[in-house]
Length: 159
Image 1: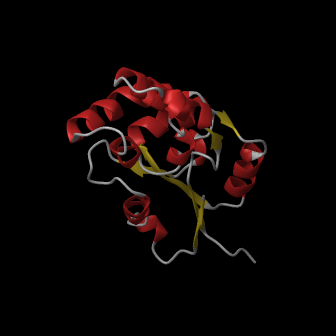
Image 2 (image 1 turned 135 degrees about the vertical axis):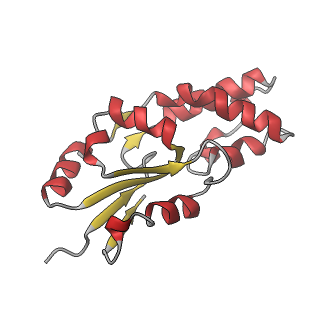
């Protein structure tokens, strides 16, 4: 008996190995602001929303927003974890609804999923907004769960 009808996936660190791209993103931003990226432990920023991470180092909202809008291209250096494509095939073949629930903005994660060959597996790409209206995991999941196709479904969040 199938236990779930739908699976929501985080993307970074769950489906794709994105550490190199995220580190490049932060290093570029830190250099641009006159900070030495080698003196900053960027690993603590893997996972939290980008606005929160940048706000730890930049004094104004304007500086944070400047970095967010300018750095996403740097974050696209990534690769699939081993076995992801096979897992996605299995879940799709089982007829499960699949969506992303990532703190990366939809406009950023969509091209990454396309480049990695994962886009077509998903029924919905759920992610943060480019503004602050949807900017944390709780808000992203809440938004994805509003999809009427998920009403009454048993849902698993992975990542």
